[in-house]
Length: 114
Image 1 (cartoon, helix red, strand yellow):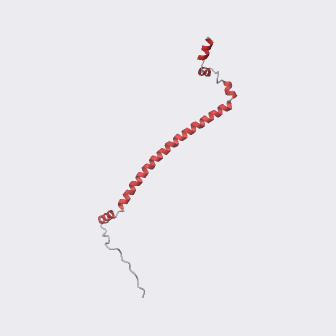
Image 2 (image 1 turned 180 degrees about the horizontal axis):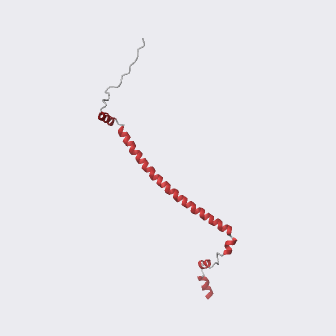
């Protein structure tokens, strides 16, 4: 019965550390599979890293786009306020150009055929 309790205590971790499960013979016999597994793990790590860096770049570009859109709206409102008729009249008066808004529309002159 002493052997049975000893076998139960002999867990997978200890057998692995002592080379009973993954020995050098295992790696020699299955070197292609081991290299393929390592290569796939490296590709997975590389893809995760690229995904994380690209997501960070996208987040920065979205923030920049939001700032540019806000700036565009501000510039548009400033432009719209400058082209209003009343603000144009104020600018003309400030610059003393002597221009005024006509009360009547312009006349159309027609040539008579005689």
